[in-house]
Length: 532
Image (cartoon, rainbow, N blue to C red; front, top):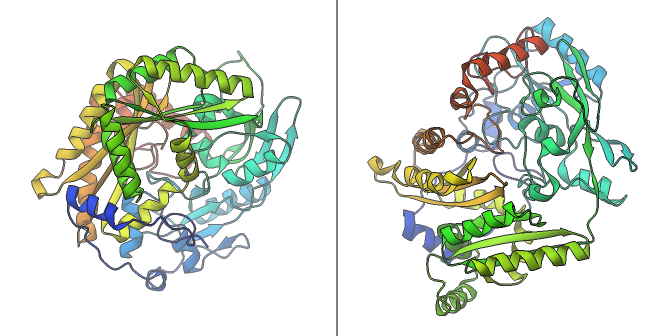
């Protein structure tokens, strides 16, 4: 059963050993715990629904609680404290395009706002009801999760948009194919959500981001249907797929998508390499990507993330011996860990590994074989469960990311981390901050920053601390010319920063697109654009 106020399946846990708890206490102080609000009490506080009965719509309070929030830090505080605020007035479960058109008509008759809902994994507020006139209807696409077609000649697969990641891979895998899109939210998030937020998978260096995989599909909008044929290429004007990509439910509801698939790889493996410091490792990564190395992933952690990952693993004895061995080889506390993957034929994989190791050695790297890679692969979708454990120990954890050209990657990363470390100084609170390069490109990289801080006894104070941290780092990103989001989307949390990236004319163009597809402004208002 899925947790209602935390991440993932209630049967899955990520234990925090006592040694890890001591590590956190030393760095930022003892955690501050408060009791969570019981589900029953939150349900009891849900106001009456403002929607007329309809066979596609559920209005019971429990269903509305389960669709009220996503997984941003403010969402967690709201759910755990019971201070949820606004709930959808109902949750619809369409099974077809006809059902979606019926719901659009219903919304018009009842002056309702509509929120498309996939896996509910948004970390920036995409699915949250906001204050405003009229009732709110959440459209849950969980019923629309079939594979409709697999064209093995063209290597195109058609799915309904509500299908989650594991089912996509299971359906394709039975016929020898893969989509290869593996965001950290893979277990819960959906194809439609990936498209609506311009998602990036952990192995996008090999398989491509979702915009590379999204070949076409179908969008139901209040103004009518929009078909996007899966042309291999076209010079017939602007590509309308790119209006749908990242549209965050503002234009309509993605009901199905055609995606580009590949045969399952013959070989896939992940490897670890230690570098003596952040600069030398980052230079090795840049060299590798600009040499068009045929690896499938390059994920490079800074020294603090490397140390914290080992500390939180709970393998205290192993970590101690590893530390001694690395120090003997002159890999001291500044050491940084690279995990890289190879995917493809046996020949391609062997060559990619050999070339990656050669570049690493030229930059002072220490290859460590597959042990670290196996550990990373085993925990790649389990790591988000650590949020549950840390919360229960009295700590809050959040992430933010950007993408920026190589010339300013290292400086931007250091400025973001410095801003986060100092953001709570006035309150006397310390912040644990670390980063990694999560995705790399010929011209730049994504800087992915994680920060931990102590919860406050007052939930509002916890959110205030988060606001200070988020604002401090976001202002650095904007000042440095980075994108406000590399893979998490805009939602509510990043909307204020979008004009700096798009410009006034660009924002007006997006507003006009929204008005074209959604003339009455019913589709997910308040998301993506601050002013509709």
